[in-house]
Figure 1 (spheres, rainbow, N blue to C red):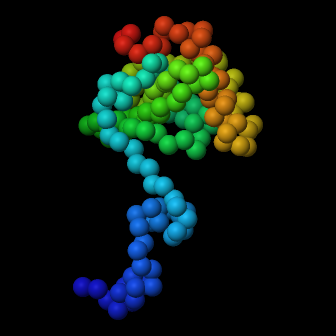
Figure 2 (figure 1 turned 180 degrees about the vertical axis):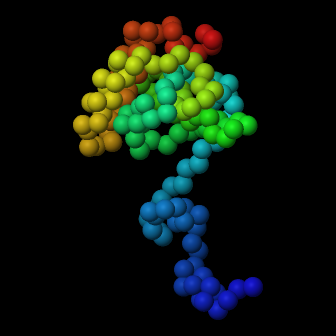
Figure 3 (figure 1 turned 135 degrees about the horizontal axis):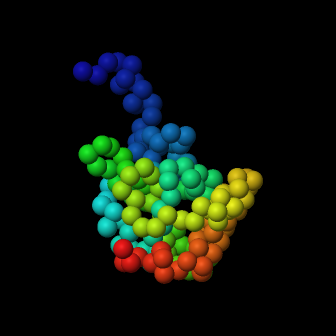
Length: 152
């Protein structure tokens, strides 16, 4: 049953698309809605050259304002998110951050903490992206074979 006020509200806002319903978007501004895809860890890591893991919120400033590509969930709920990133050397990375089921080697804490403090001081998201790409390139250069996909 549609009440008069609801019908009137629909008529005053014709063609309200799904992208306009996202929080913070205004109709006609061209907002893009992104959703995470539920994947197994094997599927999520398949396209990357390197795989690294970090705990939940350990890379909060580095990954701030980035959308995860995929997530993994199991019997007890959400396990982790997976981000696809290309570093400054051109290597593709799959980074898993979360509580459980993260496959791959943990990223070195000392280096991650150093770059995390650099990202904390940045205001622009483009600067954070550059810091993240430099961090991943440094890890790939120093510990390359340890994080290569297919090693585990």
